[in-house]
Image 1 (tube, helix red, strand yellow):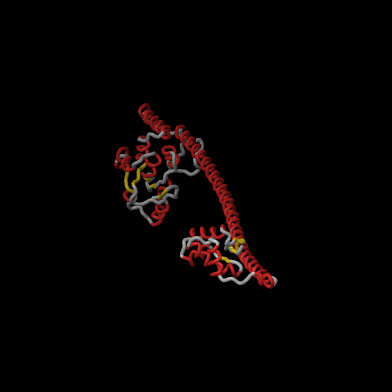
Image 2 (cartoon, rainbow, N blue to C red):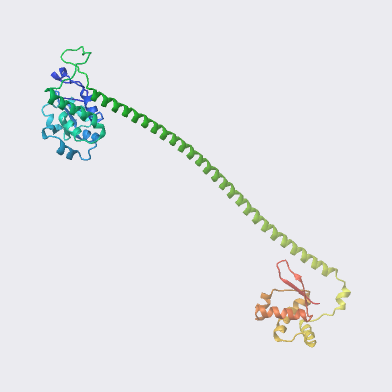
Length: 350
């Protein structure tokens, strides 16, 4: 047994098909089908290959409907007694298994006749012509080829025109299919190239974006550092101004004439409060409480207290303390001489 176009064994080497079986099957199915040839010259084809090429959806059903039982057998049945180590290697190389269903040439033609694909029409027309010729003339014969092979033992015949036309059309179709496939592959390669180019550009843009983000983070860090340094400088300046103000106050006290201090007799906080009461400047207990808290500092030169501090020491609400301070200023007991660097009001005697 030999497979595909392998070298025949024994006497099978002298056998020759009237028409090359590969061309015959190609014209019938439109494809190159795997083939197993027995030593007696009988050809068998994988049923799944033939059914798939002819468009059958179910190989088993196609064999049951169209092929006679003696034209479809398993590979193990048709190859009994002819297996050899070399043959097994050939079958394995073409992915042929002993359990596969095979059809002979008659079974293949039966499947072609049952096929409805337009590609099978030329071959079926030739088969019909053969049958009609046999019915009319009693026989059908092929014309010998003008040029015979040099080797003796066989005769070459001219391929029927219908079969030759079918092969030509199939070859042209395959050529067009190959050209379309090549064009599609070229287009796919070009699209992949463009995609890779776009991917490269995108990666470059991502790199630039990451660089910009890094630069932005660096600038943000520098800005935070500058802000912290600015706050530190402001605090330093404020402290320096406070120290300068305190130094100026101490210098002013030293430079104040002694006669001025003599003209102003020393006064105690109680005397100051008594003078305010005598002039009816302190009219309520709340106002008196606030005045009593401010009096010692006023006599020392200036009272620097926030409303919250006075409220905590007197037990009055902040709003009430604010009203009492306004009353003392309105009645001329004291006046506001500005605010400290931290916003604390400064009150002095008028």
